[in-house]
Length: 93
Image 1 (cartoon, rainbow, N blue to C red):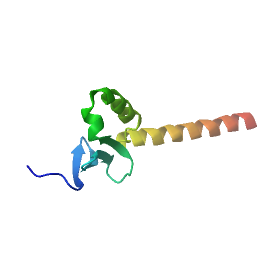
Image 2 (cartoon, rainbow, N blue to C red; image 1 turned 90 degrees about the vertical axis):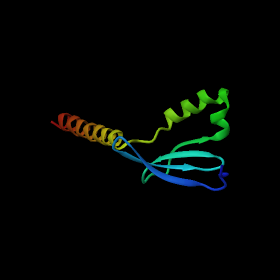
Image 3 (cartoon, rainbow, N blue to C red; image 1 turned 30 degrees about the vertical axis):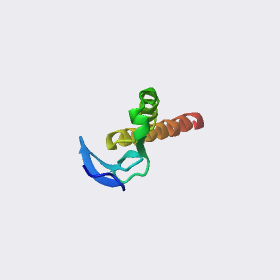
């Protein structure tokens, strides 16, 4: 078996979203393609049973936006902006 001495990167597709997986001697990182921040887990945390819950919680809170979630966030911002403008128009009349 070959020892992992340096980082190894691969692209993978989950559904319609593309991700970059980087495996290194310290752990692994899964990032939405074209982004910098993503899920990063150290091997020690993955193996340590007590840390598994904390890692899962951190991963769920820091989950990268998928393209579908990103569109939903943008749409909510547009709707909120329209509602704000409508409220200002009503108050002005």
